[in-house]
Length: 147
Image (tube, rainbow, N blue to C red; front, side):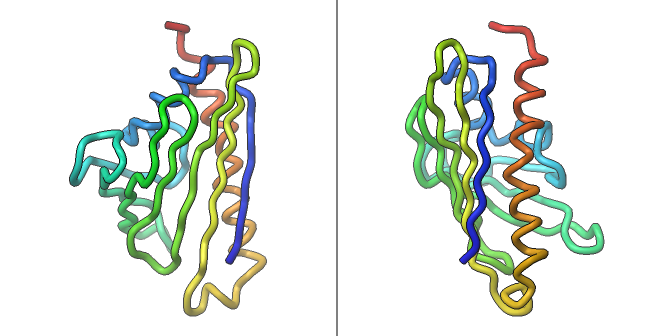
């Protein structure tokens, strides 16, 4: 099992950040490699909703990585699981208010299978790079005009 986490403080209120994160269609605007995402089943942004996601995989080929929201607590927490793929992935966004800003922590855990289980160092570097994309989320949200 590999674990990675990262946090940033975003100059926006917790509900604005939460709403942006909960709308999975926003993923391509801040997560590199996400090519497309659309609601497959359930109610958008609710526990049990499943999104069909296509990401850039090895060699640039498209890989499907459907996402299921497993927990959604308004203004505080969003947890998800990736359905299928070469690794078991769970993650979440955890929000806390700091004055007029919001601290966002992105944590994920993966259990690689097959060949990936033997490639620990590159695997961990890739996970760390993924959670560090919160810096891009911060830029995207802070560049938007405040509501």
